[in-house]
Image (cartoon, rainbow, N blue to C red):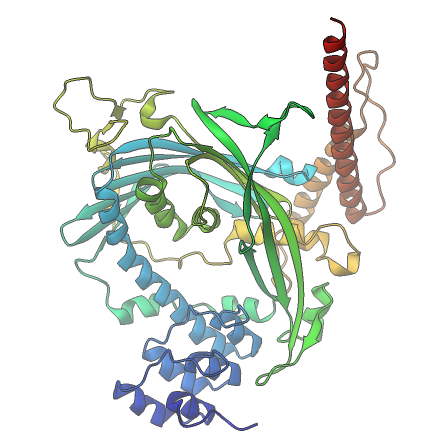
Amino acid sequence: MAGPGPTFPLHRLVWANRHRELEAALHSRQHDIEQEDPRGRTPLELAVSLGNLESVRVLLRHNANVGKESCQGWAVLQEAVSTGDPEMVQVVLQYRDYQRAKQRLAGIPELLNKLRQAPDFYVEMKWEFTSWVPLVSKMCPSDVYRVWKRGESLRVDTSLLGFEHMTWQRGRRSFIFKGQEAGALVMEVDHDRQVVHTETLGLAPPEPEVLLAAMRPSEEHVASRLTSPIVSTHLDTRNVAFERNKCGIWGWRSEKMETVSGYEAKVYSAMNVELVTRTRTEHLSDQDKSRSKGKPSLESRNIGRPIEMSSKVQRFKATLWLSEEHPLSLGDQVTPIIDLMAISNAHFAKLRDFITLRLPPGFPVKIEIPLFHVLNARITFSNLCGCDEPLSSVWVPAPGSAVPASGSPFPCEVDPSVFEVPEGYSVLGAERSEPLRDEDDDLLQFAIQQSLLEAGTEAEQVTVWEALTNTRPGTHPPPRAMAYEEQLQLERALQESLQMSTEPRGPGSPHRTPLAPTPASFEEQLRLALELSSREQEERERRGQQEEEDLQRILRLSLTEH
């Protein structure tokens, strides 16, 4: 196959891996480093797909965009992993994290400046993670993000830090952002250790060499990627449609309204929300492929090794509660906060993807969105300006006071001391001991692996132990004693779930029915738990339908009595 023609000079040099000429061409600044060839590939994408490491290094030194996705939806880093070359993965991963860090540092002052123009407020965002799977449901936590905004200052408090070794990590943290004349001050306050990490953005940005060196991945990180499948998940909202929910029985149905946090809200369903999951394995050894239970199909392409990929599409229904009376502005007050938190928080990133859709009118006082097949997130906004549960740091100005209302329909004053370092805390410099979280976020990985446990043949699933212990194929298992103890805990949780599903519910049955004999394997226990959960759901739906039919019959009788 012939290479690209003369109208694509950088692509032509990449094709032949003439990296010295490529360096000279880029120094001349006469060519567009992001130009796409007829197949939609930039020079960097072409160099990675061809495995031309020297050309890749040159393009990255000249700031070629690592974050761009191909026309097929694959990121440059994912294509680098598909080559199976450790050096390729190391350099692309390093520059990917470096470019993300630069974007983070550059974006925070702009977001704070946007917040400065909006009215001050305090609000609480309650996150509840839910699942219909009994074991997963027991593990799902909740958290309340408390948000203070005054001028260019923002503070977000949280207690849920992440998920690790089958345990939700808890701790009291505050993230404080303070706008300054030529930049922003960012503080991460660890209240448990009484330590504050500070970083000034915009005034004296870190040297590129220093930042790049800090983003160099470990050999273990590179090896784990090369021995794990490439997984791409995204919410496809191109065909999403919003519909008003109905209530009442047939003949008396009306559009549903509910009160959320004191505000009347219209209830909508977002239909046709699809989660697309694609898994590639062409870079794996036969041994690693045997650990990945999927059945990939082979897809040819014009360059590089053929793609081995399996894919699935799952359709969900999201729910929104929208209030047209709520005083908060989604675009001016809430979206900048979600953008800030999404930089390093996976579930905020999912929320941002959803609220950027063209929603029906009103403020989303409550949102329920799917994260993955068995995991949902329900977010509720409440306690606006401390009206439900008063707190000393926030108050509503008395009528006639000199406090400016900033044009807000709901004036609120926030104590400036909440944005200061608490007395007695140690103030340290920026903490760069670990890079920004990406698609390897522990919570995200847990959800991805759980989503693979849907109904189907065992050959199409990851092993139960891999899914439940949050270990990916190719990673080292936990120590034997720890693994044994965790398995015992999980089996006890499953047995408890099974027992709850089989015990009698009538008032005349005080004693529990004995459990059935323990299934032969842990996988069988999980299968049985899922089966029982599905039966319970069917029974609830049947009872609900019966109750509605009974109510309809009663209403008809009441109309005919007179």
